[in-house]
Image (cartoon, rainbow, N blue to C red; front, side, top):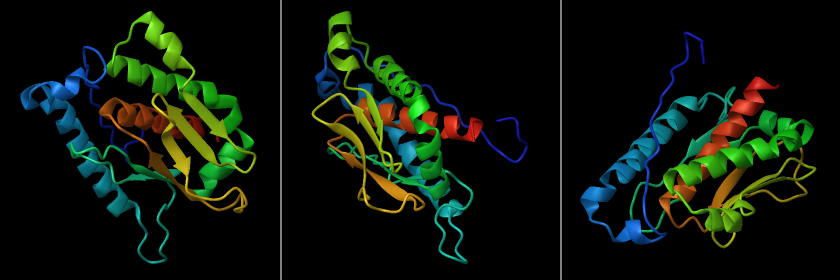
Length: 196
């Protein structure tokens, strides 16, 4: 970020080969890297969530546009995570978000296909399933391939445009979906910070 009071953390996304579902049948040793990344992210997200909360007034976001939490790290089917969007992020989504949906979709698509290379036919089928939808009131939906999978707002459409809200996971079945959504959330954050 270029700021002395910030830290940057970089990791390479895992690269899974083969048809969908094949990686699940591989031995634990071959999947170890993927689960190690998820476990590390889980710990990192929990620690960052703890230090981001201002305990004096109950504010869970401080000056942050979003806070990630509960990044699942088990291999028993829990692959989701939650995102708290601050009021400032919701305002940005209302005013500027619609101009950048394609960039967020591209980030999710790039991460997904990097982790899980697909042939051209599969890409044509899946490409339209990477969607970012922002309502007039600033509610965000991120969708990825597989039966309506993604992050959906926990709030109702009638909520105030000035309040923050939480995105909750829906039908996240495999790791590449989780990491693709994370890439989309990261891109959203970067765009909002760079274009206030």
